[in-house]
Image (cartoon, rainbow, N blue to C red; front, side, top):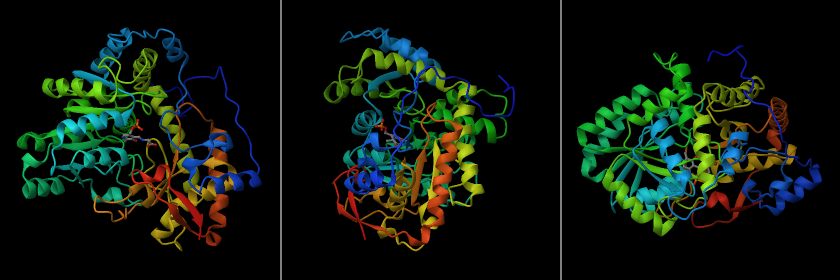
Length: 459
Ligand code: F0G
């Protein structure tokens, strides 16, 4: 449906609200110190506007809540599983479905099935949990995203694209038999929510077909990617997001999904495949790690909410408002002169901490520092996406990612335009006193996915 105006105004109204606490600077200072300057360790009670993540933080619709009441909590063969299976087939087009408690449950199973020790897994930039599961299964991740993705200033509209020359080099070096699949994310999270183009996907499909290599799709934010294709890629302006989503999936062989993002639920995920043998093996494994293959760690009501959420997620009006709100915040930040990743991505604003705090070295954790300072200023909670998130290589050395970012992730259907104004104004205040900001040192480092639980102290 064509919009009535050019505005991104929301296609819904509120019928229930959740009260949030306003805090004082003294309270925030204390809370931050207790949290070891890690926003993951703050109590949500002490947060005013929570932009830590768009994961599991969406507001469900009245239809989804009504669906929760239709939960069929049978141990096996729940009605809601079959509903979800139908929706996944109809909207995404994948043949076989294995529900999991969330995305990383699916990544665990799929990595264990497809990856052998010594394998190479090329991907369009790493994601934290995805890469770790690939490594734990014995594989090595190789980044094949185009160079533009590592440059926050480069305004190329499809920075999630795969560099086929880099991929070709890997195939020549290691041989196709060492590459179980190419790992493709739509809306590349760590690059700033940057989309992959349909043309690139088609070219990738042609390339991988030649070598008989699979494409596995991390479809966590596929609808947002589809929206950018509709808006920016030639030949797609008259196609619906729903049609574009299905076409994207058609160029891949299977997928992992964290339904906590696009699909508008607070918990849930799945893996899919078009290959019977992979499905059979996944059905064997899901009972070990998640639960029976018709619930995979979820309640019947969770699967029902997910099935309904998936249908809502591909609605053109929904996605225009969702991404429109993100763009509103990003443009405001750009007007204030704050350095952010461009183009503005689908699920949040990524502030360039290297540019914001140029006097800090990467070992002073500029993005971690900036996230702490923004919380201190206004109670807005953001997330580090830089050297702390990147973690260590299997040999123990730190990864030094080019991008050192603070992510302002926007939950879906949760905050208003006035909240966006508060966020931008707070960031501007911190920008005004940036020269006085000092870095952090890490005083506790967990073994895996350290960003979740690491603790810091002021230098
Ligand atoms: N893939 C992508 C692209 C993700 O963004 C996430 C989660 C996962 C996989 C894992 O899914 O959390 O359901 O196990 N991203 C969250 C975030 C944590 O904040 O970006 P999960």
